[in-house]
Amino acid sequence: MRHVSIELIKEYLERVGWVKYEEVDEPAEEEGMIFTGWRSSPDSKGYVVCIDPMTEKNCISFRSEQLFFLPVNATSLDVLMNLLLAISWINYRTILGKFSYEPVGGELKFSIDIPIDGDVFTYEQFLHSLGVFVNVVESYAPSLKLIGMGRLSAQDFILHDLNGEIIVEGEGWSDSFRNLLERLGGEGLN
Image 1 (cartoon, rainbow, N blue to C red):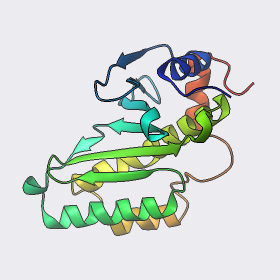
Image 2 (image 1 turned 90 degrees about the vertical axis):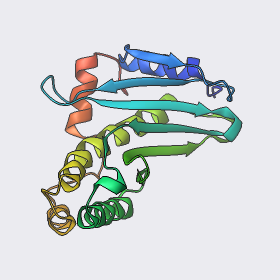
Image 3 (image 1 turned 120 degrees about the vertical axis):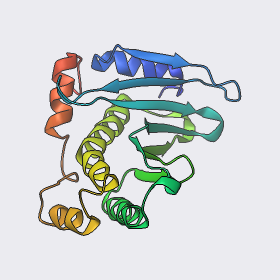
């Protein structure tokens, strides 16, 4: 059993081989947070994740940063309705985590918030959470962006998802997360 802290999260990241990250202080909280990111391949767009151990709230949060912006005052009602319907569908299908849309600034995020009772957060829990996070973001963010651009309807997106073209749930990690771990060269769950 380990106290959940920035130091523990850095240890877990380095154990995986994830050595590029930035620690940021949060003046109003006991612990800071860590910003890092990944690319599913050298040619792909990168994603940013903030890992925030909130000891005063007994939880740890994995949050995407700036998946994309779609301000409500600059977006058609049809596009917004399609985006919200798709987010609702994904949140219904996803057990761990949620997409959220903040309409004033227009930011779309994904987060996993895990309660930490008794200060326990194991390496296995960390890898599980990080694997789900990477898998869900890589599986759904590109389609949500197309919906936000008006190039894909929520109905078409949901039909593709129902037909098994987008598979997020299941046993183990996604191929993308496994490939990422292999490129990092850390120990994974060995």
